[in-house]
Amino acid sequence: KQEVTQIPAALSVPEGENLVLNCSFTDSAIYNLQWFRQDPGKGLTSLLLIQSSQREQTSGRLNASLDKSSGRSTLYIAASQPGDSATYLCAVYNNNDMRFGAGTRLTVKP
Amino acid sequence: DAGVIQSPRHEVTEMGQEVTLRCKPISGHNSLFWYRQTMMRGLELLIYFNNNVPIDDSGMPEDRFSAKMPNASFSTLKIQPSEPRDSAVYFCASSLGTGSYGYTFGSGTRLTVV
Image (tube, rainbow over all chains, first blue to last red):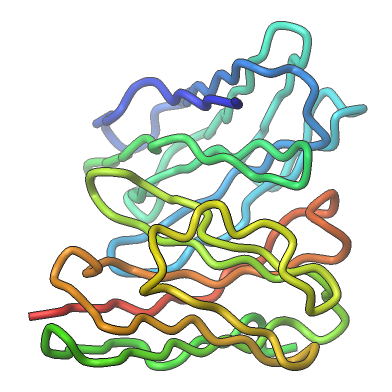
């Protein structure tokens, strides 16, 4: 059974810092990996989707990488802003099933 | 497209009452998923449909939970009778295919059973 782990569970950084969120998964036979953002009391907003054949995806200040063989993905956020404060969830998809990590709660301090 | 639409946004009900949550997937998406999110267990898949047919309901916690998808544009998740431990946020998501193009989530229904 696929297990998804996100480290750290919480992260607090000053505004302007670059940061990396980590995601690891136990079964490397995935079709894709998706990063989501969740604001308190809100739904999940898709940030980036990486297909299994891809190594990375970029959107604005966000860059997500995928190393399928080692079961790892990272989400890099450049020049962090207070508006980036949210919980970031990693989800991997295989065998008609998407599994989520517990998330990393990010706080960017002004 | 308005995205995945869920209703109601919030539901407060008394223990023992029936609760029905509703979801309208994105037009053209042929897979629909129901998730439950709690602090203790995170996001859990309850059931998913492909082309309106339930494919995997192994995540449905017990017989009190049932889900239907009578057509491509509507699904319900019903809890009868509801219990306080059912309190959670319930999300609906849809995708093209079975997820290889990623999922789009609705805003969720926050259920409180008192």
